Every structure is written in C-alpha cells, then in structure tokens.
Length: 113
Length: 119
Image (cartoon, rainbow over all chains, first blue to last red):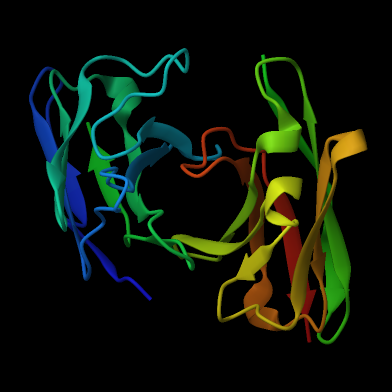
C-alpha cells in the first residue's frame, strides 16, 4: 500500500500568518489520465472531515472552501498552504491518496491558532 | 444541499456483528453514479480507509482495507439511496467512529457513527 507521510505533526501560528503542511507519498500519485490523486481534509473537533483540496490543487466547487486554502505539488511531494490563517482554521489536517486502493491517509497535522 | 445521514452502529461484543447505514438526501448528487466509501477513526488515532463500493457500471465492485478484509462488507441500494457497512467478527480494535463519504476524492461526509466493541 502507498504510505503517506505528513510534516510537521503539529503547528502553531498566529492569526494572519501563513501556514504550510507537507505531505509525501511512497509512490507517485500521478495517474495516466494526467490527474494527481492527492486530497487534503480538515477535521475540526467533534466534526466530520471536510474536503479542502482534491486532485492536488483543486478546491471543490460550491463547498465553501475559502480561497486562502491552496494546494501545490506533483508526483510524490505536496503542500497545503493557508494564507492568512484565521481562528476557525484550527483542527487536524490530513492528506490522502486516492490513486489506488487501499486509499491511505497521512498521520495528520494539528494546527493551533 | 446534499446530506449523508448515518444510523446504526452501537455496542457489540467481540465476535459480534453490527450494521451502519448511510442515507443520501438532497439534490446535487447523483447517487447512482457515485462510489461510496467508508472511513473510520479509531480511538486516539487518525483516519483509516475501510473500503468502497463502486457503481452499477462497475458491477458494484468492492474493495477493503487489509484490517477489515473478510470481516466487513459494503452494500448499496440505489433505489433507496443508501449504503450499508456490515461489520462482522468484530474485534476490540474496531472500536471507533465510522464515516461514509462519496466520490473518488471523498467529497461529502456523513456525521459519523460510533461503534464500540467490548470483550
């Protein structure tokens, strides 16, 4: 199975600052379709995970994901950027590969504001 | 607005069985053409993919994670817009919150259902 590794495991930033979370995969997530199957999720305390970014850099349309969230990267190295962090961005962030089953998640990164 | 409403789960003893349901309501999603995934969050741990069921076009093919293969199964009834996660031969380590979700990138999520297995 594809192993996903996130860093850092925890991050503390002040409101308005930039936050970046890295995710690497043990195998390239680039599909022959030219899509890269990497997603990012935010899980706030007591809530279900919420999709932030899919296909490495796309924000889901109509899902209310703020523009301050962006994804970058290719192959097996990816980054989630949060520009101008706000208090409601606190929670656990996960990357996940959807290239092949079993889908696998990173260990999670706890963001404190 | 799309809603994934879960029910079922609860308490079972080791070796027992439970079922979790996931009903999809609202417009904005074509249930028939959506793969349904199940993900769990065990105590103190992160997210773990449990399995998926694909659509009729793919003969409702299923796939499972290694830790649940042979014990859990996923089914769906497109006419009722519902998916089921059948949990059999339960182990203490299966205790956690189970979520349903849709699509290749897990776009929408249910509210989660608690499953507790005691010895």
